[in-house]
Structures are given as structure tokens and as C-alpha cells.
Length: 285
Image 1 (tube, rainbow, N blue to C red):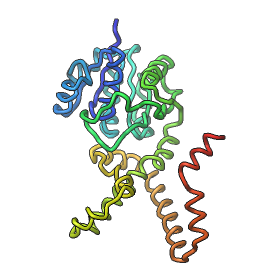
Image 2: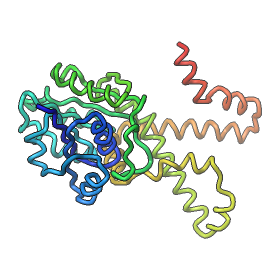
Image 3: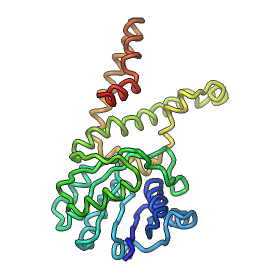
Image 4: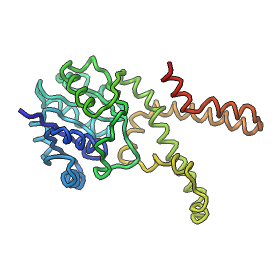
């Protein structure tokens, strides 16, 4: 019997998964709490069919949760209570520890695979979905020992089809790391945009004349959906607070270099902490 893949949440990530899997002739059904998203997803070919929430859980071989993390926590236990030993459930949430903790005692915990495909962009909604969004991007699977081997194998197969690079971490460790490499950059982008609003609110014409690529690239993430990022920030609140404090301390240190007018130290700092150099050094190792 042909595998039926059910996607709950047909925005950027869920929609892009649907696009990709349909190219491999999977039967993809979908549900979204926002009817406009459902209608758009069906119209542009993300899914084969729109079904009800209950029907999706009942008939899907693989259930993919691609909704905000707080919504995942609300419905995941209910879904796991209804699945059988052949069904697989995985999510795409940007935080993992709270999700995993919420189902630790569920009798069907093994049918769930906690996953995070790291492939988001600043645009949201099914209209932004891309079939190649995940190509050569990283994906983290968390707490794999708590997932049944066949569920893990099935989930890995999906991410292999998406051409993702899969690795494994504990959920608590994942949330610490992701607060630095994903959540902090978003905070910085939103806060910088706030500064621009404050500074140029009454000088919009001047702002347009001096805006450049540096600002555009640095504030790109502030275009991201507030519906998505508010629950992420709150769910990873403790880690993010620590990360922000560390960032502030380093920002103060750099400010001190400017106050000292220390050309040598500033030049050394800029040269040493070029992110491309860091990445290249890691790849070389």
C-alpha cells in the first residue's frame, strides 16, 4: 500500500516538505488550523488533498508536525495516544527539550522522533515554500534512544530524500546550541530593526537614501513571522537569556576597544573573528 504522509501545518517548512515529497510521488495529505494556508497549499500543489485533523491522524503512515512549538506541545500527547505501532510521528520545531519532556511518560513515546531541520528563511506561509529548501542543510534528531528503531529509520529516510545532513544530539544540549546559532541572530535582527524604527521614525526619507546592503542583510531575519518566533523565544527563554547576556558582555568589550581607540586590537579582533575563517578551520580539522 502506498505510504501516506500527513503534514499538520502547511507553512514554509511543512509546505516545503510537501513539495519535496510529492516530487518523489508520495501521497501527501495535509491539515492547517488556518484555512487560507490549507487552500493555498492545495492550490499550488504542496499536498494532494486536504483532510480533517482526525482523519489525518487516522490514515497517515507518517505524521509530520510543522506548527509553532507551543502548539506541538499542546497536541502531541493526544496524537501519540491515537497512533498505532506502525505509524511514525516527527516534528520540525526549533526547540526540542520541552517537546520531549512533555511526552516522556506517553506509552507510544517510541513512535515519535524529535527532529529539527535547520532550513528556515525569513519568509513564511505556503506561498514561500520551496521544493529544494532543505538541500544540503543540517538536521538534528534529538534523544534518539527514546525513539523506536523503525521510527528512527523512517524519519531518516525522509530527511535523506530531502538531501539533509542528519546528526544527533540530546534535546537539552540542542536547545543550548541553537540559542546561539539561530535564536540570538533573530533577536539581534529584531532589536536592530527596533533601533532603526526609533532613530529614523521621523526621518524616513533620509533613511531610504542611506540604507545599504549591510543593514538589509543584518535585519533580514526581522521579516520572520512573529507567530513562529514568539513561542520559540519563550520556550527557550532561559538559554536565550544567558546567550543575550554573553552577547551584551562581548558587545561592551568591543565598545571599550573603540573608547580606547586601539587600532591594533580592533584590527586583530576583526581578523580573528571572521565567521568564514572559523568555519573553514573546522572543516579543515
